[in-house]
Length: 464
Image (tube, rainbow, N blue to C red; front, side, top):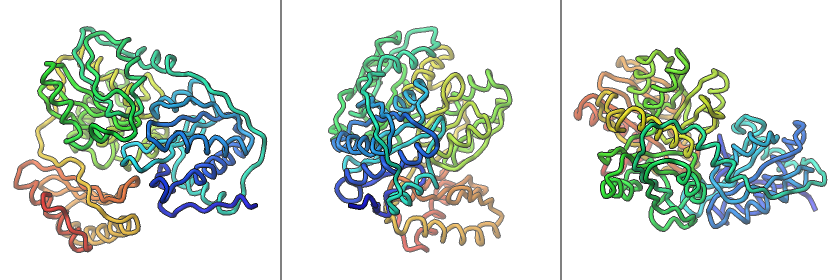
C-alpha cells in the first residue's frame, strides 16, 4: 500500500491550509499533512512538535489523524488539547519545541477547518506549504517510531498573558468570545485582571449559535455593542474563532478597527522603541501610516497575511505589526506572534493609563472608509481576476496620475483617497476597501472598484 497522497487543489494556501470538511479536507488529508509536515521537521533536525485544536466539531478527529502522521515519521508529539491558536504558538516557544501545528478553521464558516504551522520560531507558509503537497504526492515521507504526551499548559499561558498588564485604574470590560476556542482561557484570564468583566458566549461551541466569530464584520459586534451600553462599560473586546484576531468597541459603542488599534498601540511601543519600524498590511488606513511617522516611527506597508507579516517583522526587527483584520503582533515584551488575548491585555493597560478608548481613537484624523467588503468569486477565478484588474489599472490609472501599489493585489491612491482590491488567501472572495476625505470622494472610489470588477465579469453587490 502506497503512502502517496494528493490534496484537493484549493487546500494548500499561501499562509495556511484550509478546506471544507468531507469535501476538500478529510482525516486522510490530516494524516498526510502530519506526515508531510513532520517529514520536513525531521529532515530539518527537529524531534519534538506541539499540536492543538480549536472548538470546531471536526477538529478532534483531524487532530487525532494528524498526530498519527506526526508520530509515523518519528516525532515526539506534545498534545495540548482544545484552546486558542496563540496558546499553541506559546507552547512551542515556552517549551523550546522544534515545531507546532494548530488545527483551526479560524473565522471561516463552521464546515471549514484547516492547519496553521510553525517551525522553530518562524511561521510556516508559502513554498513550505506547497512542499507538503510535493512530498505527499511522491509518497516521500520519513519513517520512524514516534511517541506522544498530553500536557495542560493553560495556567502557564494565562500567567504569561496577565504578566504584562500595566493598568493603573480598574476598568469595566465586556468580552465577546463568539463561542470560539478561547473560552476557558478567557475565563481564567479575567480572574487575574482587576476591574469588572462581563463575558458573552464564553462556552466553546463549534456551531457558533449566537453569531459568527469574525470581528471584522460589523453585525457580529452588535451583541457586544449592546452589552457595552447596557453595562456602561469602558470598552468591549471580541475575538475570532481561534483568538488570533482582536476586535474592539469603545465606550460610545463605536467599532475600533484593527488598523486604528495598531495606531493606538504605536503610541506606547514607539515611546519604548524610538524610530522603530511599524508594519501594517495594504488594507490599513493611510491615517495609520501617517500616525506612525508623526510619532517618529518608520511606517512600512506590507502584504496581507499573518505569516507574511510575522516574517517581515523578524526581517526588519519590528516591535509591532498589524492588519486591518485584527491580526496584531507584539514583539515588544512578547514573542512576535498574533495573540488577541495578549493584545487585549495591552489595550486594557493603555486605556487604564491614558483615558477613554474613544479619546485614543479620536486622536486619529477623521476619514471616511468602508470595512473589508467581500465579493464572492470562485477559488479558480479570484487570483486571475485580480491580475486582470491590476494590469488594466496600471495602464489606465497611472496614466491619469494615480499612484498604483501592487505589493498585494492593487492599491490605487488618487486625489480622493485610495481603493484596494485583492484576492483572499483563506476564502473564495475578493476583498475590497476604500478610504476618502469626503462622501463624494468615497463614492467615486467605490465606483472605480465596481467598474473594474464589471470589466472582469464580476458583479458587485447592490448595496456596495
